[in-house]
Length: 183
Length: 183
Image 1 (spheres, rainbow over the protein chains, first blue to last red):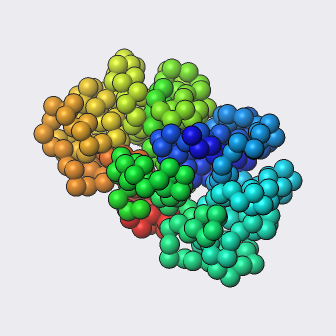
Image 2 (cartoon, one colour; image 1 turned 90 degrees about the horizontal axis):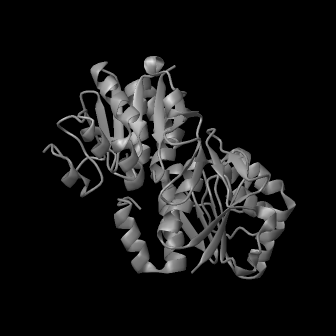
C-alpha cells in the first residue's frame, strides 16, 4: 500500500486538501493528514479539520510522497517551516514523489525542489523564479514533481497522483466513480 | 447576508460537503455547518470536520436554505433523523430553498420535498419514486429545489447556489476564481 503525507497549516484551501485526501483514500492509499502547527487546523474558509498526526511525529522513511494543498496562508507557513522545508529537500534527494497545488508550488520553489515544468494558481508564477510555468494544463508532471492549478483542478490532481502510485486501471475506475469526465 | 445550513452526519461525502461550504463562504454567504449527531463528524473517507453548531440548536427562522451533502452513510442518517426530516418539510412549506447532491436527494424524497425534475448520483434514482431523473445535467433546479450528481459536480452545485442567493455577477466572479470553466 502506498503511503502519502498531506501537511495542513492554518489557511490551507479546503477543497484542495479534501479532494487530494478523499480521492487518494478511495484508491486505497494510506493518507496521513499531518498538522504542522497542531492537531486541529482551520482552513482559508474557516472549515476546521482534525489531523491524523502531527507533522513532527511522522517517520518519513516509509512515506512514498508528500503533497501540499494550496491557500495563501497555508503556503506561507509551509514556505517558512524548517521541518517542512527540510522534509521536501529529503524527498527530492531520495527520488520520492512531491506534489503541490495552487499557491503551494511557491513552497516547493522555496525548498529548491520544484521541477522546470510546473503549473500553479494563476499569478502565483510571479513569485517563482523558474520560467517553466504552464498555464494550459490542469496537472503537470516533470520528473518526480507534480503540480496543479486550484480548487477546480484538485480532483484531477488527486486522480493523477492515483495514476502515479496505483496505476491506470485504478485511475480509470475512480475517474468514473467521481464523475470526473473533465479531467 | 444570506444564511444556509449544511447538516453533517457520519459518512457524509467530504468533497461534496467542503465544496458547498467553501464556495458559498467565498460568496459571503453565512454557512452554518451543523452536526446532526455531534460537533465532530467523520466523513465517508475518514476526514473529520468540526461543526459550527449542533443541528438541534439552530434557529431556522433566519435561515434561507438547507443543503444536504451526499455519501450513503450520511444520507441514511439524514433520511431517518426526525428533526432533519421535519426541518425539510418546514422549508418546503415556507417556500425556502432546499438543496441536495449525490445520494442525498433520497433524503429529500423521504421527506416528500423533492421536485419532479431532479438529478442525483447515478443509480440513486432507483431509490426515488419520482420519474423526473435527469442524467444529463450537472445541476437541476426545479422550483425551490436544486440537486446535483456527485463529487465532481459539487463546485458547480455550490456555484449555482451562489447564483440563486447572490446573483449572476458573484457567480461569474467566483467561477473564474475557482477555475471552474467546466461548470
